[in-house]
Image 1 (tube, rainbow, N blue to C red):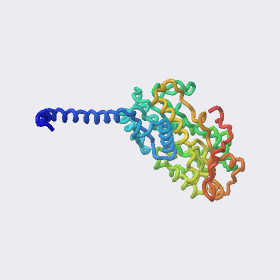
Image 2 (image 1 turned 30 degrees about the horizontal axis):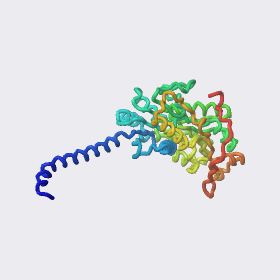
Image 3 (image 1 turned 90 degrees about the horizontal axis):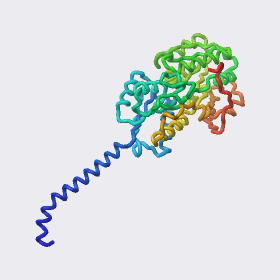
Image 4 (image 1 turned 135 degrees about the horizontal axis):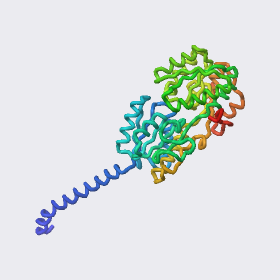
Length: 364
C-alpha cells in the first residue's frame, strides 16, 4: 500500500466504523420492528377441559392452514382462567389493555368476560365453544344473526338435547328419573336446562336437578340426585359440570348408573353415550373465519352462525359400559355412531352420520 494512503485511511476509519455500526443498528431495528408488526392474538379459555382445548386447537389449525403460524406470521399468547370467573375477568382486562389485535375465546364465560372488557371494540373478537351466544348478554339478537357488535363474531354450538334423550330412552327404555347437576350462573347452562326440562316433560322423565356454584360441589350434587332416586346422570353443556366429568362418571359408576352427555370425547372415560359436536372441527371453522378477518374481511357484515349449519352432530357409544350395565344398544344406532368403544378398543367410522331430526320440543 502506498505510504500516502495511510493517513487517508486513518482519517476515514472512524467514519466507516460509524456507518457500519449505524447500518447494523438499522438492520436490528428493522428486524425488531418486523417482529413487533406481526399480528398479535390472545386466546382465553375458561378451564382445562377437553372440549375447550379441542376448540382452541382447531382454531390454531384453521389459522395455520392459511399461513398464520405462531412465531412466523403471527404472535399467539394463551390464557386459562382455570374455572375462576373473577380470574377470567381480570385476564380479559389484561388482554384488552395489552398489545393484541385480536382475541379468541373458548367457552361462554370467556366470551362474556372479554365482551365486557372489550365493549369499545378495540380488539376483533372471535368466539367458539359457546352453546347459546344469544342468551349470553353480549349484544346479539336471536331473530337476526347480523345484529351484533361490529367487532364480535363467532359460532353457537348448542348440541341437540331432545335427540340425546331420545337415544338414551332407546338404550334405557325404563328410564324414569334422571339426575342433572348444573350451574345456574352460566347462561349456557340455563339454556340447556330449559331444553332438558322440555324434553323430559315430553318423554315422561322426571328431572332431579342439583344446582352447583363451582366444580368442588359437583360430586355432592350428583350424589344428591342419586339419593333421590336418579336412574341415570345427564351432563349438559355446562363448563363447571364438564370440568368434573371424571368425578361424575366415577360417582355414577359406583352407584351402577350410566352417564350420558352432549359433549363427545368423553365416552372413552366411561360415559354410555355422547351426542354433540367435534369441537376441534368447530374450532377449525372459526380459525378459518379469523384468517378471513386477519386478511381484511369486515366482521361487522358476518352473521353469528350455528355450528349445526356447518358441522353435523355425531354420536359416540360405549359398548363396554353398556355390557357392564346389561343395557342393549340397538343395531341402527351402532350403524350411525361415528365412534364406538369396544372391549378391543376404539373404532372410528368417519363416514357415519346420525339421522335427525334434531329439533327441540315446543320450538325451544
